[in-house]
Image (tube, rainbow, N blue to C red; front, side, top):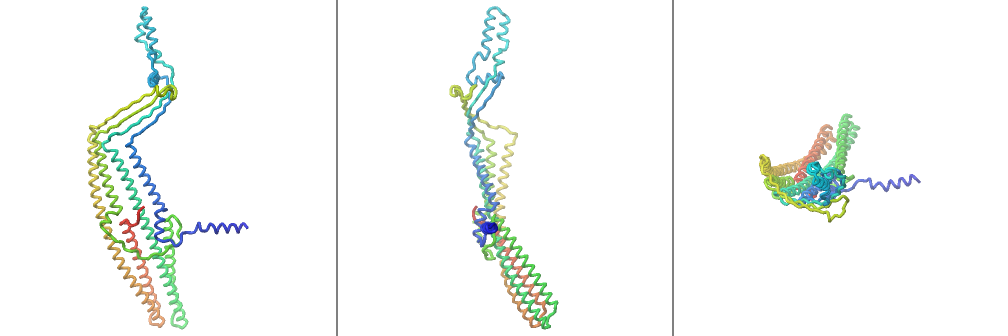
Length: 463
């Protein structure tokens, strides 16, 4: 009974561990957009930049603080200050009673009292009793004018958020590039495995022919051994191709952050994208980042210029204090308002040097934008040329492969007639394998360059 339950649970759980089957390329790209771990991390970086921009915007609205303090002191200055803030200070706190006593005695002719009246420190002022003090206040500070510095800081943080979005888009293009390449690699290697299977089948047929001819006395053991060696070589290539296919599936599973068991095969020749110079400049991520970087450097120039302008800020404070918390709050409340203007008149040339540095950096980035445009255009032209060259190679190798197959079949038939040796047949069969490998390699190179071109054109889709 226990075993039956265990088997039932295992059968129910099997679909949970099974990989995705018959996955299409379009579906895989959608999964990458949503579930790729590197893209998720990039989006977290985007969110942090977004909140940095919000924080910079918040500085325009100033700062409002509420403060509640509780203290106890017998320090003369503190106690007298506490009483003043509580609006409870009296002349007695200055030692008025001692003064009046000495004044009366002085009037009666006591010269010591006359001296003490003016020179003896009053005990009630200098040695007060300890006092509690509770203060509650609300203070608000608002920047009225900063020479444009706060505005430019806000613009810079917004631009940095946009820059992080470009970074995410570029990463997405890379992941789409890798996903497409994985699909086409798997399709190519499956075609290669299929062709290798046919070649191995043909070698086995050849081995059978050699064995038959040996029985009839037209072949030797060395001929059989030579064919078997070639079969072992082809079988090794077949096994390596299967391992490469498994590795490609593992990489695809890593990209999609889920197990993939099988895909829907795609044409092993990726289509050539259309290239437009205007669209390239409008869509290429590196060019857009360079342009945005140029805007940021201009903002940085404006920030340095603001150091030559005054800053104006306003301040307001309202509160109440007493020796009991929130006691007679409105009767003992007080307010303070003010405006401050601050203008740096001399900084030893530091501000001027920083401004010139920002201007030079702006000029440098202007040239970097031009370099990015010309560099990307050159890279696109180079990729187009290489793709066209490799497309021509694909056509050539296809024809050579067809020819090599025909030659091999011809030599196999001539071997049966005793016209050629088994070595001649295997040489021709090696040529077929060579052409198959060359065709696979050039197709792979061509597809890789096409996907790289798509990535440069930003043709992968938005985040």
